[in-house]
Image (tube, rainbow, N blue to C red; front, side, top):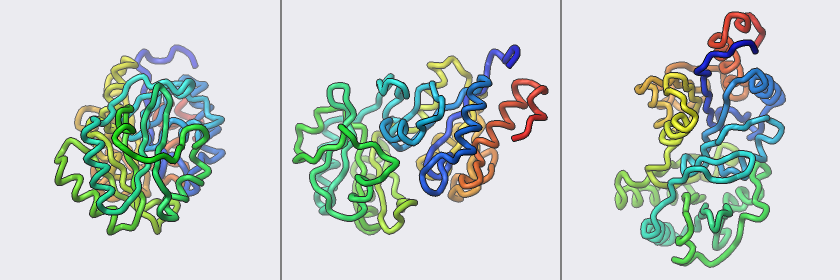
Length: 299
């Protein structure tokens, strides 16, 4: 690429339901196109509810180098080393209260935390097949980080990024309602059916400071990039704060399979995740911005 513009665009995409296909994988087309774009100088990174261990496994073979936003914004992390560059953990007393609420509804959470610089996923017991599915999910990498232990107050002395609770829809919605009543706007809860195992519903719980939107703003600042040069992609409700950054000059894009609340807020709708919509949009947008010599290249 000859003489790239000083302020190259920054593309930040969600994974599940957005960049990944219906089997939670990066298609060969998307993988090859991402590597081609990155080699041309295109800046691409991720904002996901997944942890860095899962992100690195899924994105193996893609030459990403920029920090990624993980666990819905709880951490901004160096994808190569796994080092957390910025973090927004939950407060210890808040974690204890949340755990008591979860326990009241006879559920067992997965607790994501950082202990002495090491990422950990703690759980006390497997109480349903949805939890077992998570531990056996081939797109996750639990080696050396998942541990079954008694969950007591000592666990929350670590940097706790958040909780995942997996159960029936009724159970999950009851827990979410009570947590939102108790903590008002200080805690974010997202409830959804697992797209790969839809009979089980998931509830993700984390600090309201740990949103993808906050991660995008902080990452842009760290990279010296104006929000007007940022393009974000999403599909589900946890992407909504990030999509709404378009009110601050950022460009927001959703895939055709996105939920309606996202479609109403996004600036553009690209093709679906199963049609490699994100990477096609990035390729066209990037080549238009860096010069007319690329605009005629096939996408």
